Length: 204
Length: 192
Image (cartoon, rainbow over all chains, first blue to last red; front, side, top):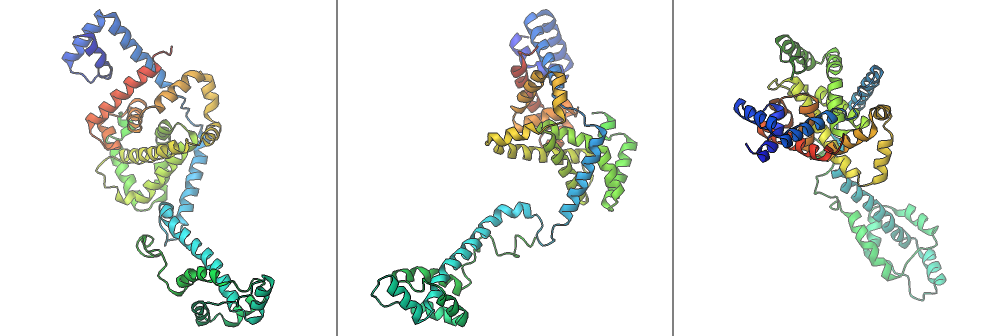
């Protein structure tokens, strides 16, 4: 047996994984070869070093804390509402839904403001046109106006708008608020890629 | 692995079967017994894969919670301890992957290591340099080699048992172990 082969099989030799014949042959070579004997000694020294890997048996008091912590975790997990099992695993999937809801809310907030302003009435419109030095007549998109009216915001909207200095905007701004209103008018904007809440993923 | 540890003796096997039956029946005392019997072993194997007290504690506790919740699925095709080791090793390896990702933020990693109160005095007494070199060397092993090496070298499991725990063939377990030992020999060869 050559030194190279002995080196390759030293771990198996140390672990007793070789056949009796191979073991005897290895032993014979190592006894006669200083280099291979030194390599075996190096392996054995490495294994001894590995035994001291820094692990320390915890003291008995530690296990009292360990078990208390375990009980608390079981209790906490047991408190999780039954309709959201595995919420921790679902959190990454829910993130886009939450983001969409937030965007929707922000869009609604930004979008509704000018619409509110537009239905504020003549006094507000006059104020804006005069203060801005704009000689054009204030313009309200008929589509936006009808949408707001049809949703029954009525008097509250008018009251809010009348208290707001920025009551009307020129036509260029008006088109920008149409898209959020379209979202408001229908329910189709809800993301359906992951399924709606309560259906499929969360229902399991 | 010894009968005492693996539960291979007839009496131990019967005790384990009864314990599993009681667990399936929802006997809380049985769960306490299970925790009392296995807590050190699960914590130790988790620590040796994760090399961190807090993470090992989390992993061992999480393993017990999984056993508690899924004991009904345990059909006795493997031994209870093999099943529990498998759960623990999987949790620890998953944590290891997450930790490797977190270590991309060096400050977080430093904070985590500084809060390691229990092992520091022992490390000082043992010779911190050797312990650190050993830890660093073991941490360079690929995850599966690290798990196999831990189970074989520190837990004294057979390759057949390791194959069940890690979910590979006996030959793969041996190959992983031999590779790990050769790599560690290279990395630690200069230490005296």
